[in-house]
Amino acid sequence: MLHILRHHKPPERELSPAPPPRIDLRRPPVTPGRSVSSSSRHRIKSLSLKSAASDYFDYYVPLVSTPPTSNKRRAKSPFSGPSLSTPSKRVRKFKNISHLWEEEGVPVQVQDTRFKICARRLAKIAPEWSSASQGDDVVYLDDSGVCATDFEKLVDLDIQLQHNSYVISAKFNDVLAILRVSISLHSVEYIQWALGYLEKWFPTKLVAFDEVLANQQPETATAACIALLRQGDDAPLLKSAFYALICRGSEAGEPKSYSLNEEHTEMLTAHDHRQMLKAIRELAALWITAAASPTLSHLLPLCPTRAETIRPAPIVCGYPRTGTSTSTSRGTQSTFMWRGTQQFEPPTPRPTPGPTYNPTSRTCVSHDAEQMMCIHARLVHNSGMLRRFACDPLRGLRALADLRWEDEGLCGACANARRAVWRAERERVWALMDGWFEGDWDSG
Image (cartoon, rainbow, N blue to C red):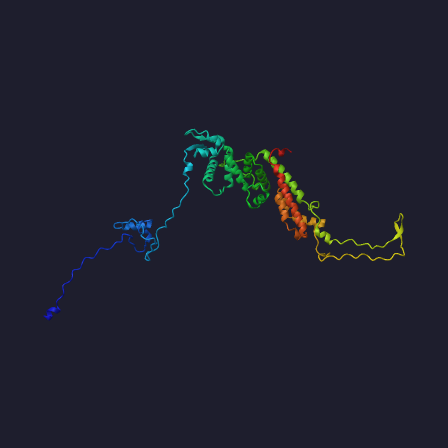
């Protein structure tokens, strides 16, 4: 019996079938080497997740997201890898400007380009041609001499002025194009805008004009700007533009050659050339008068250190004397007869100089004409300053004032007095140019 029990095997248990693998429908399966963030549980937002979902498309079903039950932010799972999706952008609200363009556009033909502008904006851009539109008729602006590229810049400017509140930054050639098309279309508002914006390059104030001449590069289209300013009839800007053209020479003049594709080649007229040549003669004469020699005695006060360094005249002793003097052809002989009763009177003592008086100290050289001539010749003539600013007295007088005259032997009072005279001369020259480039000034 024991033998039978020892070799008896218990019956084997029947194994139950293995349960199917649990599939988390909230998260796509992760392949080796690829991780999925928690933010992609409810929707696929990148191509990488779409490709991952396509491999398991048979059993991957995205669920509709439900709002969380609590206000607490759901913690990120520590087992989730780096995010493969881009962060969602915040929705921004923009100003709706559709009400400004609700009107039906009017077709406008400029050369080989057709624009479509609402009637209200066309009346502002081209007031004389806006009334020509009747229904669907096309408004042709070819007869006004308008270029398509210039008109496009004007339309872009009109859009920016209507819908943008920031300061508009335009280039020099773009402003010239807007001024050109505004003059052709007789748009007074945009003519005033272009003339006001051109003051950035040609200021009407001397202080601002100095900064422009010193810092900005010369514009190659200054001659074209003068031709347009002549049509716009702006005398202050004409003065600044002409002076920039004169003092900068060929750097700001007309280009040497125009390209074949360039449509606008405004040139200076004969009237402009005559006025410019006369202005060059006047400016050269003013510069030579102010800088050729150091003679400014009629404009400068007396040097304050000169009176301190001159010794006072000796005091004559009071010897009362009587006598007669006889004159002959050979000379003058004097015979004095002294009174024996008169006693000798000692001379009046010289007043003691103050502590600042030092006859041996360095004196100002302003009263030494020969030495001042040598200093002026070295700083102005030999350095080439007189020739360099031959037609530019504004910058030339400023360069004279910037020299270190104290290092050449002048006292501070004399150096500052000369600087004041040169600055006043600059103001006078700038005011004198007001009527040079308008009217019949060249007839004189």
